[in-house]
Length: 374
Image (cartoon, rainbow, N blue to C red; front, side):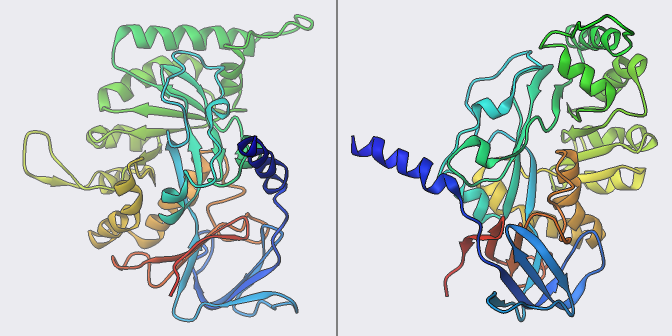
């Protein structure tokens, strides 16, 4: 009985989630991502949003002030492709499956991701080739609706270089195209499995396409050819070997999400830089960290190694924040520091690419969710 009462307390009291008071971080170096860096300025947070930022931003009376002297503030990291928070079972080939239905609210289960600086995640449904629709969420809260910021966020497509997978995908898209091109027909609507594919072909629902190899990419493009339309919006989640097809992907200016790691050429000990290969070919690159604890915690450091290897700092910053946010369909809310966007940010004790910087504070929706105590 006490346990039930406790759960009711969490839902009724904590679930109300009252808005935090205004907070200002002053004298801080601001990495906006979407605009110029501010060497020393103030960022004001109010009602869960960024109220103002700049070198001369005014701090209203009654605002809690944090002195950021010697520190750096940047947008929270975005993980656009995760199974963190999902059930272990897959959805199979079910494009109508909604990942929000398996999202597990938790008061502390997401603490490792928060401590690593991730303030927005997108849970994708497992299975394939059409596994369902992802949910973008904040890793805090006691109810799914409280955590979710976009559902559906994107349609997940998992491509394999085999005839069966190609034919399944082709047939599904062909059926959706007939509905998309339909004229008249009264009140008839596509069935639940076809409807999200119609939305995808119309550009109303983004896609995230998992492709491991150049061969799989060519297969996907062959399947997609009869359905191509300027309205289509999708990004590619790339495997370690996809960089070998960089020229083909770059010719189409693909958006590619990769792990921020150096690799080796096949069957050799020659180091390769898949991210550099993709960028040089003309792709837009975003980062996915992986879901393991060590991968989450080392994400900033791994990106710093790519910067040390020659990656442009501005591109690296966007690849951790705005590019994955846009791939997950939430770029208008998170991924950069701009007036009106969600107050999701990190405070670091040094430059994020120095290799030794620590995250000393994580703020989500204007609330301090993690802080290093002196």
